[in-house]
Image (cartoon, rainbow, N blue to C red; front, side, top):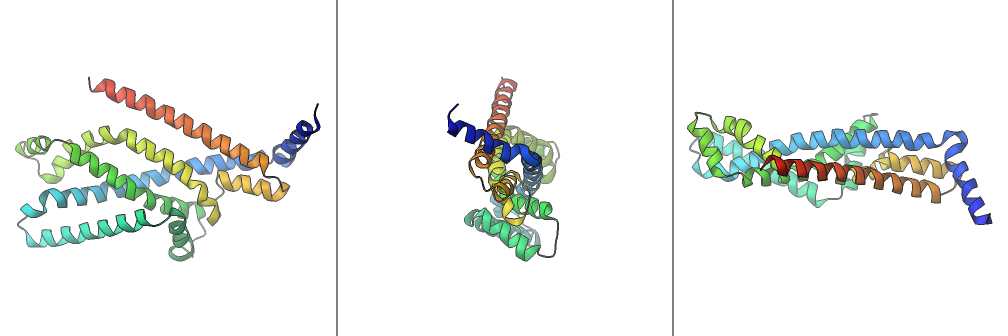
Length: 242
């Protein structure tokens, strides 16, 4: 057997088998999925609120007669626009560093810091996805809700938003995949995600080939898996519309 193959085998054993170093990657996979899942939930919550404020402003502001309501709606819309501009205009890496080292500097919960940072970042993109979904719903749906005696909030909650989420589910699933890859920077603030697990192995063994190749393969497999789920979801949604 060629010497270079034997060396690769020895390096593989040193990187993953000795001292059960493969456990760093297993722990990293779990933390990466947890971080991504809860960050997306936070992003969806923020996205719904921001999208509701912005669409309400776009659709109803000119017709509102209550000056107090118009004032607060305009303030809320301005805050949402600033949030979207800042979050989408700055790197996620900078945002997570600011949250960890400035805003939450007194907190020792690194996972919570990562969830909040990535959730805030994801919320800006989810908000635009949801807003686009709401704006795509025919105005007749809103008018039908109002004719049934629903107020604006009830019409949005019971009629518009259920149709919106059905239309944007594939886009939200794709946002999950994007967020999954973006969490690779969480290790910079001490979260033991998949990338940091590989870096720990690199620091112990002084090897880069197997740890980096392993996490690249794991990310690829996870992305392919979730992409397949998105494809299945899209097919089922298309069938349900027939």
